[in-house]
View 1 (tube, helix red, strand yellow):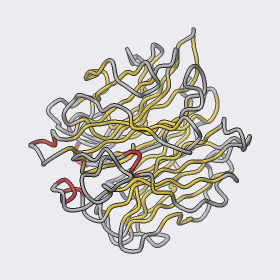
View 2 (cartoon, rainbow, N blue to C red):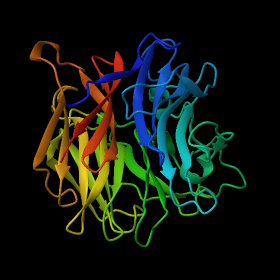
View 3 (spheres, rainbow, N blue to C red):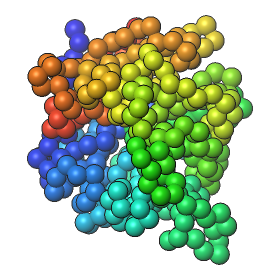
Length: 370
């Protein structure tokens, strides 16, 4: 019998008026770590926002009390992008990398060149019990046009807004790029344009277990924005991307043949309708030499509703299997289900952490997909 949906983060509880932007990973010992933005004063995207975490040791049936990982007082720390490095030479039990963003002004103002978004990372070598001091990696993965340009930074340009994922980051575990940590991201470039056309999705990656980072190529699609990624067979990688422009209400899929460094194919996918929202993509196994994929998003092209998981057995070219997760009636459907993140619990079982009921709660739900 399927487990019930379990509330992990509830608005108005544990010191925060609202919780948004879920991300989840499973650790080598089976524990689940759920991350979110804890918004202290309200639901706004900018303000006093903390990076928070909870742990489950029973496959999501119960969750720990809240742990605040990053708190910058009245400013924001958000867009958590966790990933477990399972191939670190010094830590055979794995190293957790948690990438996140900070900002000193709202997205609208940063787009106007009135503020800065930065990129940080913390690490844990004891399965999330303790964390390293934050490391600012902005100069390696951003192209800020003013605040960080100095004698040690030789490639400044006019990038402005910046955000990771949202959702989990990934590690490539096979092939030529084995060990690579890849973080999907997006930025705005130059002055604000109509329908957010100055946005581009991109990524950044590390091939030395977080000692250094490199920028990946940006997508060509104007308005490409929040992104999620999954490794494929034969050194390839796929990103599923939000179309912030909104003229086509479908996910953008982008394929790379070099582990996410460059992009060789980009197109709208009609089988993945989207209301201009975030999505989640996850590699869930191998079948006949090809990577099985799960994709989650609010599958209503008009409203954030009808959260659906789709399965692809041909590495994203078709999505024939559809699994409804959560939805509500026509009269109440606006913003019912929004951001989500997928995790593989075992060969046949997925878990999904997602925003529900007009952002009032973030819930976890395990389900059989196979």
